[in-house]
Length: 314
Image (tube, rainbow, N blue to C red):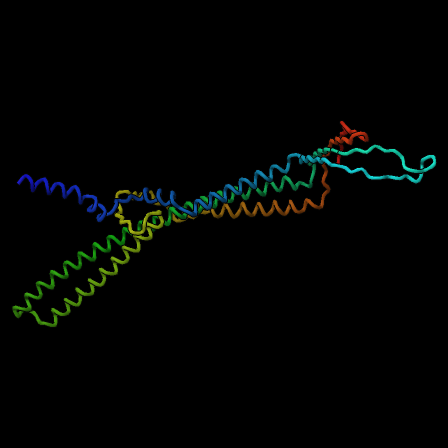
């Protein structure tokens, strides 16, 4: 007797995970939203767009910084034969220095002072686009939350529909048994029994459709949350909070106009386009900048240049 008890206990421990897997995981609405946001590929794309917009904004601000260029060269020279026909007594070849190498370096600095406000308008356009992309990301986030809530609600309705149809099927099957007994005792016509059985068959067909809808709803929610398609889910209605402070439709319309992220993104893109038009019109005006440079050169036996500095306004 004790061996049987131990055997039953061992079997229960062994098959407990399988029973849990068949029952499925209990899923709350906030957990579904969290998984959807965590595994959303669209949000990752939106974050990449934000990073790109931030980099473009930094690039636009760097246009205010001075432009520095440094260059240098080192040359190896041959020894050419030069015969000057003029300028010497008696003509002939003249002795000249014959350097074998030459080196020079150059550094230039350009600092923009005025460019028809092209730099300023370019920075404004980049900033507006950066803010617009952030609102796009928030709008995508709200869409994912809404889609998750809809998928969660559809799954709940599908599960309740299956329960309802199963209950109707049980009642119909019990009614068929009662009518079958009445028909055997001669208390019911055969035609009435067939009508009841046909109604039971229709309910069975409705149950198949409800179960298919349940599977589709479960797969849709699994895909939104980034879970495997065969994951079995059970909704938890206790996690859904109903707000009692229902307001008028006018208040909700006003909140939608103020808080809609896609509308704000459109207005920011409008401002960015306006700034770009102003930036393009800056080509009508002259550009003024400070310039400076330094040159150094060394040609052995011929020329040495140091501290050759120039500065001015261009």
